[in-house]
Image (cartoon, rainbow, N blue to C red; front, side, top):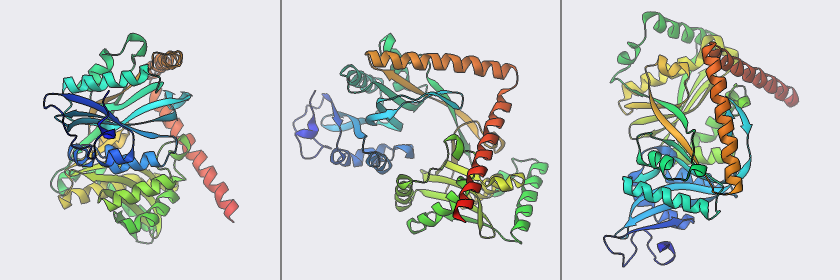
Length: 414
């Protein structure tokens, strides 16, 4: 397989390639990735695949290395697939619980990481290259995240691999998006009179707790990132999300990633304060007139006053009035507020491909058994109307753990 990266100075434009030829290369250096910046940024759709976010994420983990498949025609990039390869835990979920979490060599393609001309022909070349990587033993499993079920990449990833390497239970997920009206009145009109009064009553109660001071602040400047993180962490450490392993993570990689987004003009984090005390946050990114929702949370002490709902409603009203945000992508998960605010579900699915090896077959067996068990349990809980109750109990358990941990931390600090 030709590797133009090793033989040319400019990886955007190799010399001496016939106009009708399509060549494949795998770029595994940051220098090679930088040479693709022009094409990468012009093709980018979803900010999860932002080239700087991608590079920062890999640099933060010494065990990972880049793995970018590039298709070239007439020497110029035609399409690319952005992934990372290295030892990592591959998680098979049984509901909200990790049923097994083995560490293997994983090639994982990021959300939105297939860019450029994704014709059926090009998509087939991508899947064949990925299967070649598995056959060579360079990876035990491949994970391709959040594909459109109507895309060629999705259909070919289910059809081309041999039976033992194929994923028979792709993980279906819905992400939620909402088109915004041109002013805040158009947004508030989506609620009934009772719902509007409830939000106003919650805001009034929170304001009274702050002696009349209820503040909303948007953080989008690099110099404000550290202060923002401190305020967000003061809430996140008490949230149920922290103690079930999701939500905002406060580490060096997160600091760097948020600062980078601020420098690129993409950061949009919103925090609600009662007086000077932060009580709810909503972290997101702006791209192509769309707000991409990230982590959000609230202080459970104020749960009965719905500070999260107050923050979301106020922030969305601001988006409508500004005219700079036309759509909100709420991301994955079926949280009640998404439907409540008028968002619509859109289907996506994540797919695994397994190596034709003993370890690959073992991984596929584990995943298959986990998926069958999960579907049986989920079906039982839905038929008995217990699924909502289980989710609610799981969140309450997370809140109790968070509050206990925060109290313990406070006593140690004293």
